Amino acid sequence: MAAPSPAPLRASTPDVFRNGRFEPNDFAILETDGGGDGLILPLAALRATLEDNGDGNGPGNRRLGLLYAPADRFEDVAPLISRLAVIAVDFPKYADGRGFSHAARLVRAGFSGEIRAVGDVLIDEIALMRRVGFTAFEVSHPTTRRYLAEGRDPSPDLHYQPGAVPEPPAGTRPWLRRRATE
Image (cartoon, rainbow, N blue to C red; front, side):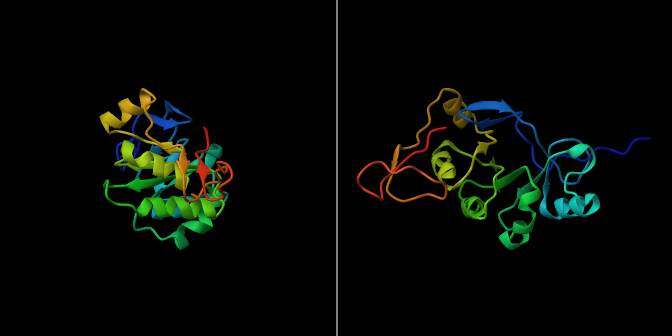
C-alpha cells in the first residue's frame, strides 16, 4: 500500500502572474516533503528536507522553495537562501504587511531567485510589492485576476523614494525614480 501524498498547506492557483502574464504554476505548496519537482515547504519542513538531502536539491535535482510565514525570522531564513529556487512570502490577510519587509530583506541579502507573493494578494498592493522585490504573484482574488489579465496595472510610473530593487533615475532630480519595465 502506497503512502498517502501530503496534503497541500494552502490552495495554490494553477497559474502564477509573472513577466506581465499568467504562466503555469511550477511549484506546489506542501506541509511536508512528499517528493516531486518544485516544492515549497514551511521553514521547519524545508530544514528537515535540506538536512536529509545534504546538497539541497534532493533526488533528481528537484527545485525547493520556502513558504516564508509572517512570523518567521529572517535570521533563520538567511542561511538557506542560496539553496532555494523560490521563496513564497505568505500574506494571510490583506492588512498584514510583514511580507513587504521580508521581500526587501531578501533582495538586500542578495537572493536572486523568484520572490512570490501568495495568500491575500490584491491589485492595490502589487505595485508596492514589485518595488520591494516581488517578481511573481499567486492571485486568487477574482477582480485582481481580471485586472491583471486585461493589463490594467495601476502601478505609477514615477516614485519619489528609492525602492529595494534598482530603478533608473527619471531625469535631473536624483531622488525621482522611474518604474523599471518588465
